[in-house]
Length: 222
Image (cartoon, rainbow, N blue to C red; front, side, top):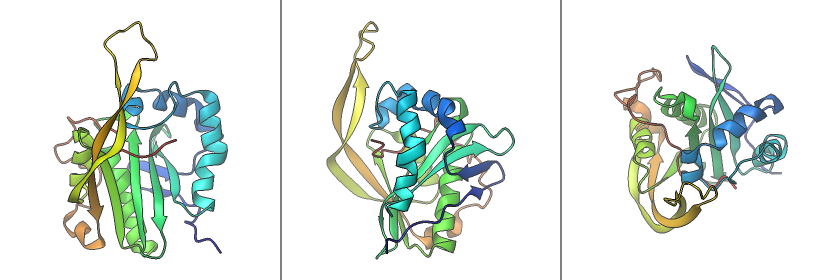
């Protein structure tokens, strides 16, 4: 029998993390067509309604039901607006470890939502699912994502040389599809239960990071 995560929702003071719904499709399309999302992830560009529908109705749930991980939409508690995504992937049930990825919508950056949502998921993994390790990988130049990792208490473990791909855009504004892939190093971070001892429970505290953009962590969104 395949081990799977439960079909759950999590909440913080400001956010609700829940499975994606078909009503999220328009906001998901808008969120994923942001240039920073295109640059740091492997999602299709342009990201179409059909891409979003397939993700919401099939791919996201398959991550959970096939035991690979979990996909959660991140929404504001008060407005219910979609503000990001948190994913668990490459889950190893034998060792109790998984890899977390995240992104924040352009209209919600600078609020500390990335660290708040990822921290909530990590606490849930450790406290309720009995996990022992969460791994995070960030592109070498994605400093804002690295700041999120540091804020939630992750420890830097090393570098995977040439292990990732990011996209850059050419200088010609007339070339609408002018994205090209560039190989990059990936920084590896880890979080263990004891690393959370010094992390504040109040996820709404931006800890001085409000001036920084919440970029996506490097993750395979194909």
